[in-house]
Amino acid sequence: MNNISPAIVEQQSKAPPEIRNVIKFLRSSKSGIKVRVGALNGGRTDYFKGKHAMKALQSPAYAKVKNVPKVESEEDALKLLASAMPFAYFLRVDRGQPTGSAANSPKALQINQMQLFQQPDYYAWFYEPSQWMTTVGGFAMLGVMLAGVMFPLWPPIMRLGVWYISIGVLGLIGLFFAIAVVRLIFYIITIIVASPGIWIFPKLFADVGFVESFIPLWEWDMPKKKKGKKAVKSEKRTKGEIEGVSSQVDVRSVSPDSGSSRPESRQARIEEVQEDS
Image 1 (spheres, rainbow, N blue to C red):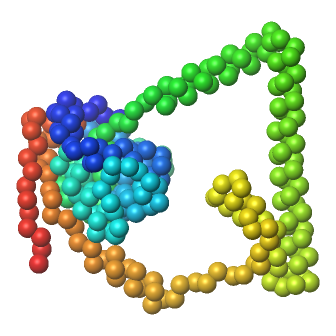
Image 2 (image 1 turned 135 degrees about the horizontal axis):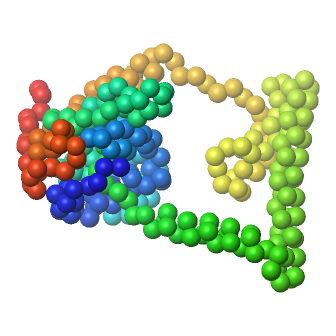
């Protein structure tokens, strides 16, 4: 990750609290944004695609965040992300070829002089979230390893307690596999006897909570309805009608040939460009 220059930090400090909360959400794992690693000015930088950020602002996870602007449509998400661009938390970049011969080599990134937010474009992060969770996790892992090494020195009652806990965990795992095998056998039998078949605990492997995995108790294996071609074309046409927002940032002060992402000036110029008719 490129070092964030003091000028960018100063620009970010001018952001209102609502915009900061939005950026913190987008940079966290709760947003679900697919983060990629690219090469910018000789250093590695995280970047994302615009449409993924828009989806994150329309997700249920964002609706639970407090003290943030309300987003009810794609247009609201587009305007909100465009309003955050002048504070240099992320900048629009052009993606080039891979920097190495390997297939997973990071692709070269170059800052685009025209700063606006659009769904198909890529944006590099110039904001680092708090690292306290990583620090706490590292100390916790070190503590677990140290406790494992010193297991022979534990008091007998603590070792007995760990043994009971491990047996309980193994029992739960075995019960889970037993349920999976039984439901599969029952499903195969019901396909022959009562087509289209019945699933016991249909949400057992779904991305839901522990209790919701066992609700409902059973369900018919009904095929999902596919969207018609007209519905798909209508969705694509709706997405294509959304235009790029006119709020722009002049980033000519960032020199791509300087070997650093630090801007030459400590002030970012903001230009208002009229929307295309």
